[in-house]
Amino acid sequence: MCESSGCSGTNRIVSSMTVSRAMRSGIQVIIVLLAICSLNSSQPLMQSRQSYKGLRGLLPNPQSYAKGFNRVVYYHDQAVAVIDINKNNEMQNCDIIEVYEPNEAMEVLTNLSIISRPTEISFSQMTSLMLRCEVLDAMQPSYTKEKDTPNGALERANLFSTHALNLFAGIAPGTKWCGTGDVAENYHDLGIDAEVDRCCRTHDLCPVKIRSHRSRYNLTNYSLYSK
Image 1 (cartoon, rainbow, N blue to C red):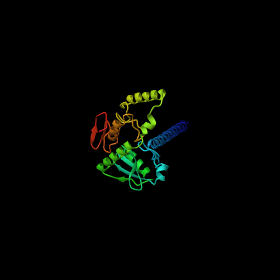
Image 2 (cartoon, one colour):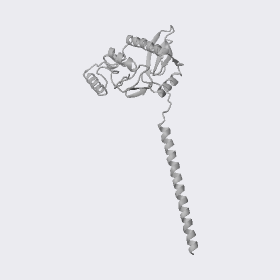
Image 3 (cartoon, helix red, strand yellow):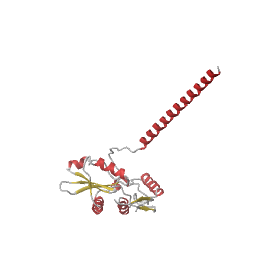
Image 4 (cartoon, rainbow, N blue to C red):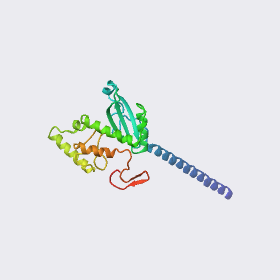
């Protein structure tokens, strides 16, 4: 009896240990699966977006197609220039896209390659192109005037509240690009003080820069603004 009871007790202990190990193994498998799912869900997906900050639409508008415009893409480091040119190779429209992170640059260039093969250019070529874009932008109808000119007391009040919110966000009154970042919708979106804003926009979209409290090019920017 004693031997039988001892064996039975031993068997129960062994069975219990086996079940315990199986449960632990099952729990470990579940934890690993959850970790994998969490990792996969946190990975950024490459999406074919139709618009980017600084670009009004991935494709030229129908009017541009009707006029026979072609879209070309140039890039250097943190800046991508999307240019519409006519049959005489004259610039008709220009948008500058900021791509600070390498994955942003890869996404933008991959999606823009659908319409035009991106061409890498030098820093001096990009800054020269950006200057031409700025001149062209100043000659075109103002996106800001169409969007932000108040027509009544209510609209003026809304505009004032917008300026107040921008100030709290670290943006200088009357501008959308001057301050700690920007609140512009695209490259052509400027504040009421358009001339000042253009200067800040050029600084913000510089193809080689280091953002506030960030490190790059073996340098660290400890200031409140990009350099």
